[in-house]
Length: 226
Image 1 (cartoon, rainbow, N blue to C red):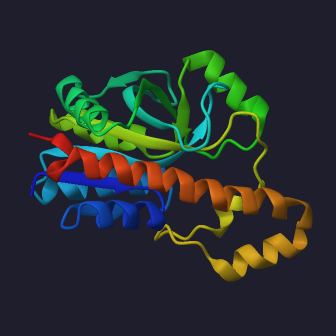
Image 2 (image 1 turned 90 degrees about the vertical axis):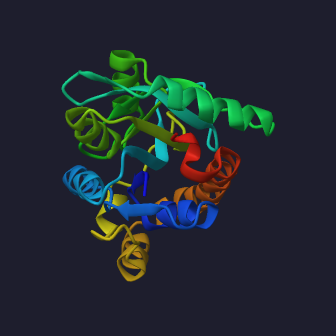
């Protein structure tokens, strides 16, 4: 076993497992502390490289849903930058390019809580210059950094920087990363004005996961971790 993967949501984990069956993938439920624990578990199991993988929120107004970002670095909530492994990045970019798929290289930002408002996203973009934001990559990166092992971040943009998300959306995600369908339905009934946004997010999620699946397939066994 070489590559260990941490995702936030179960559908992200399923996407990776379908594209590269046999890879060790753990889901954190989009909770930074669980992501940190998952990364440590993967290292205890003998993984020698860690990947933070899945969907992300757009920060740069230029990025669109479905765009794939390969992080050059992760900006932590306290402003530090954790660099990803350069040689590993080059292999992934090269393999994707040979398959005709473009991957953007850019810094990504980390947050300990979901960013709901466009103003929050704009403020983080201004402070970091990051293309996207997620809630797991800084935890995974710190564990890899402390262990002296390579890590990478591969993310596809879900929602653009200009979109407001339902304030309750993360409350419907369980600790296993799966959507609580009953709770989501109740919240949607209580907030019917959010239903169009939810429908759009569902469509964009499928598009973004498809893009990620293509990059994984082109990356081959171990996603280029040699």
